[in-house]
Image (cartoon, rainbow, N blue to C red; front, top):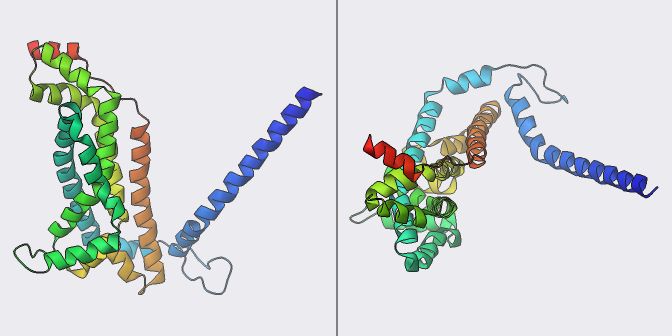
Length: 283
């Protein structure tokens, strides 16, 4: 009897969990599904369901040069921002973590500063800074890259720092130096391949953050360098079907990026051993 009551209780708890999960996903996905349905509808005004289904709005969207240029600009900004951030942050985090651990607390304070500064406050300050004087670059791609570098610092730092800890970079470098490898060669041949999954996760996460950011892009560059977020904001007041198609396309891109982050983040790093590196060196 006790076993039967325990099993009944477990089944009841499982059913309750399923109900909560279904209700949560319904709450989160219903607006997206309605947007998707509206982007595929021919006419949907006074009926519960649309009167017809069409791909015309997506055809119009993907033949719109303004949209294609906006997506291209967003990818360009993301690639440059992430690339520059990785080139600067990876060596910085590695050197401080391995050779200058006493400075790590100061680096943590610096990289956490973007969390304490609201986006709109940063945008107003940067507009004032870049609107005049010797660094007057307001309205260009470089102001976006500069501010995105600051925004991405905490995420890249944390990912790289965790990867260095998981592979025990200090011991790897000590072993590499004992075997005759220099600091640069040990980092490039031993440490970097081991932390590559973390680097990829940081890159994709940074891409998705940049694609989802609107306040800074709209206030700093606006129409002078229209990225996809600004394009979406402007088309919302012009065409309901077109804006719905844009939202779904935008969400799909971000969803793909986050899926790649989760997939790569769950992969176990394939470590490059010191013996393999020595064999490659001798050959």
